[in-house]
Image 1 (cartoon, helix red, strand yellow):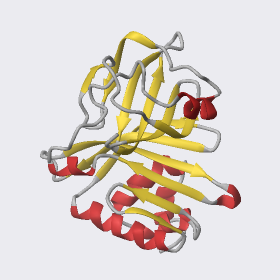
Image 2 (cartoon, rainbow, N blue to C red):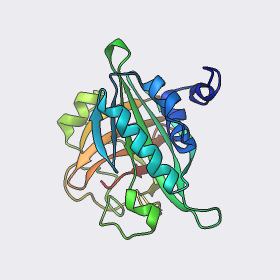
Image 3 (cartoon, one colour):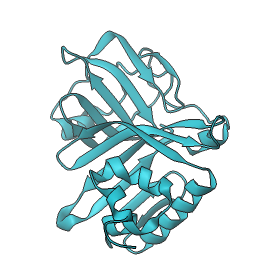
Image 4 (cartoon, rainbow, N blue to C red):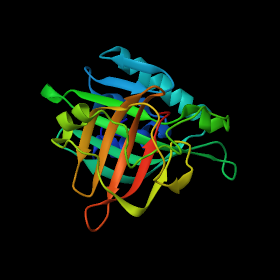
Length: 229
């Protein structure tokens, strides 16, 4: 195929176009965009690097195709070296689709290298019950280690939440952002574009993403969670 064919679906920020391209099922434009030195992590097949990431991408495309996957992006947080796209993966036939909250993290490295990390609860596509996540946890005191968060944000305090702030957890349930966090979460990367903060975190349940959306006064009005954290 010509370079203006399938490659056109990969125009734009990588975090915005990657999952839709994977769902379309053509590996060539994805592999061309990632290059030979990419890192790729997802909750289905784990992580891979360099040449092994090419086989990884092909396997994930087949996995998506078997489940008639489709991705709809909702928003993007652009950081200095990390970009995060939020959206929903849909699995299954039209009319009976499972909705899975999904985040795509792209970290830009030196010499045009990229690290791609997908965050979602993979068992949701089949409707299986998944163990406890951060749902119902205290977002007002996220439990992120202060030194870990401060190193990434130059802040030593938790963000302030609006009184009516909402939490959408990794299972897709919506509730008030109140209660308490069980255990600690450690921030591993961050993107902040003034309208929202997107943090990759790791906890006892695994890795994931927390997006904190700012309101007009700068306080947090909504929190969205991706992955089994």
